[in-house]
Image (cartoon, rainbow, N blue to C red):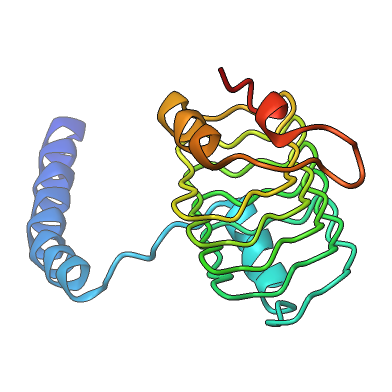
Amino acid sequence: MLNPAQLTVAFLRLVRQVVLLALPLALILSAAVQPAAAITAPELRSQRSAQDLQPDMHGRNLQQQEFLKASLEGFDLSESDLRGAVFNTANLQNANLSGADLEDAVAFATRFDNADLRGTVLRNAMLMNSKFTAANIEGADFTDAVLDLPQQKALCERATGVNPRTGVDTRESLACR
């Protein structure tokens, strides 16, 4: 019969052997299994809404929709209601957004290169780190929109027209000097 001290020693030896045998197996299994890519709740919602995306979304009500990392290159979003929409790191290059309402939209690090923004309302939009290279902004209203200074200056160089809905001059809305 073993006394309590001997039982404890025997038990600890058994645990040590189990750990020593299980450790190599755990290492082998962890190397063979690829880690799952993490996805955030907004990205998941964006993936679901991306299933509904069609190249022609002219005039649709897309208020407060999330387009995270969405590729909308060449899409027709003209005359669409995009108030409060989120376009973080989205691609809107060559997209038609003419006459669209993007008031209070958020577009962080979004590409608007060569996009048609004629007559678009971008009031109070958050447009940090977004690019507008060669975008047509005739008659766009950027009143109180937040833009990076280099982008604002570049937009001022080609700003013309008056927004047909708000009556605001594009140059004035960009606070051009």
